[in-house]
Each structure stands twice: as C-alpha cells, then as structure tokens.
Length: 400
Ligand code: ADP
Image 1 (spheres, rainbow, N blue to C red):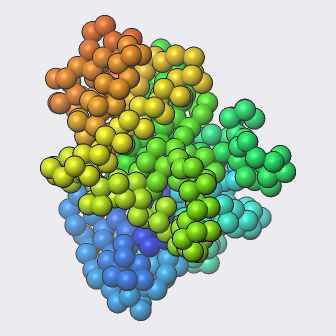
Image 2: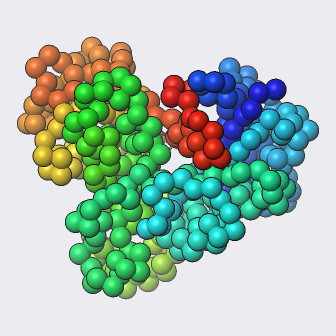
C-alpha cells in the first residue's frame, strides 16, 4: 500500500477527516468521513473517493461524550477496517496560531503547550482542534503531526493592518487583527496562479462566502488585509454570526439587558447573521426561495455588506484586477454573485450573466475592468500539502 496523509478537521461537536494517497506528483483522495453530533447524537460516517458510503453508524451519546472520545472511535475504525500502516503523517486544521506561527508547524510538546495558550483567543474552536492531536500522540507517539493554522496566511500584515484603535498594551497582549480562512485563501491563490499567473501577481480580492464568510485582499498572492479580525465574528455577516457590530451594542446587551457574556457570545455566534436577520434560516438557498420580506432583507444585507467590504479592501490594494468567489455560497449561488457584482458596477466590474448562470470559472463580460472568477476552495488539500512538506517530503505541485 502506498503512503498516505490523514487530514483532521475537528470542531466543538464534530470531527471531519480526509485520507489522501500520495503518488509521485499528486495527492489522491481515498477516504473521507468523520463523526458528527458529538455528545448529542453521534454519527460515524466513512465514504470512499467516489462518495459511496462504507460506514454509517449511530452511537450512544454516552459512548461519545466529547471530541477525544470521537477521535478514539475514528482511530479504532481505521485500525479495524483500513489499517494505519500507510499513514505517514497527520495534518490538523488548527484555527489559531496566535501572533507567532506564520506557517504550519510540526507538533511536539512545546508546540502543543504554546497552542494551548491560544485557547482563550478562540475558545470554541481551539479546544476541539487540539483534542485529536493529544489522542493521536497517545496512540501513535511516533506519527508526525502537523498543525496548519487559519491565521498563519495573514501574519505578514503590517502594523497598520494588524492593530485595533485600542490602548497599545492590548496589542502586545495579543488583542490584534489575526484574520481567518487562511488555508482557503492560500489554496485559492495557488489555483489562480495555475489558471492565470499574471492575474495572480496583481491586485486580487477573494470572497470566501460559506457558512463562515470573509474577504481577503491579495497582492502577488500574499494576504494584505482581511475582514475577520480578532475573532471569526468580525467583517461581513454570516450564516449565524453577526459580522462587524458596534461594540456599544454588546455593552448594551450586558449592561441594560442583563445578558451574561456567555449568552451574548451564543447570540453573536449562533443566532445572528442571516438567521438573525431573517428569523427563518441561515441557509441562502432557503432565503432565496422564500417570499417573506425578512428573507429578502437578509439577502440584501449580506450582498451589500460583502460589496462594501470589497470596496474597502480595494483601497488597501489601490485598485482591483480580479475578484474571486469561493466556498458554498460563492461557488453555488449565482443570484448572490450577481447582486454583489452589481453593487461593484461603479468600479467597472461587469458580469457575464450567461457565465454566471452556468457557473463556469471565468465570469467577467467583455469590457469589465477586473476579471471575475469562481475558484472552488479545498482547505483539506492545502493541509495535506503542508503536511507532506513538513516531515521532509517534497510536496506535489498538482491539485488533488
Ligand atoms: P462551511 O464549509 O463553512 O460549513 P460551506 O462553504 O459549505 O460552509 O457553505 C455552506 C453554505 O453555502 C450553506 O449554508 C448555504 O447557505 C450555501 N450554499 C450551498 N449550496 C448552495 C446553493 N446551491 N445555492 C445557494 N447557497 C448555497
């Protein structure tokens, strides 16, 4: 059996994995799956590369109370059904690399201790990210594990971009604009370089519009600025997250409505955004299909805020050569793309309606002052490539 790389993406209530086989020049997806409903209604799923279901098993909540238990179950599945001998390294998505990590890192005890100090910066995500690392270190201390960060791609930002207008000591204590979705932006920047190398060297905006959403300004493929900042709440509104908000509104909720910080946090992360605006759904498909005015408002709000963020980032870039849509909404929702580009018409962007409806890669119409693209993202592939490089192998150049 040829070598393989396991990619693990763990959250607070789910773990997703993807297994890639390595041949000389390529990464080949072999298996994918994971455990959802950890602690409530655990479901273990494994599919092969064609999407055929190999395993779908409900477990008792008491048997899978937390992420560590879920990782043990998944590791047991591998041991009994697939074998683990071929796995030469594991790559983990870790949301926060703090101020220090500007690239992926091979995990040892010292690195793990440092990553634990970032838990307060992203309490929901970071804890879940680190648990599978600990479990696999117990089970297979010899297996190289690599942490790939959502923040790392943005660490080259200058001070002007990295700061909040808060007292200086807070920046030194780590209260700064980290930015997220970095693995997605890195992957998309690489694909754009494959598809249009000259464009990739220019001024590019990427809109990662999924259940989480942000935009990133790139020059020569490097992140210049992004809309998420200290946490993954900032920037444009998302499925259930609020996006940029007057901090005075947060103070009001605590001081005058008697909400606890935990209640406010739950509202901002899970009850706001498209769901909060519409009172109906966090899913763009449902909102577009609805004739309720609240649904229409939520969609209009989302598109307007994305276009406004794009305009602000174009200032950082000093203009715009290409606009790229990616992630669930960006790749699949022509109506949302149409409205966002329409709001950027003043900047000379013109969409080809036919191309937009058919969802091909290149969407700009003749005469558009910037190119418009759809580039599907693949964060797992990016993690697999990083993971292959770190334990001393050469990464393949081609896309999986
Ligand atoms: P994540 O990986 O962050 O969970 P995705 O990038 O998969 O999210 O995006 C999920 C979102 O994409 C869904 O909530 C939905 O709003 C949107 N989406 C997916 N498919 C479509 C579609 N065909 N049309 C419109 N929106 C879609």
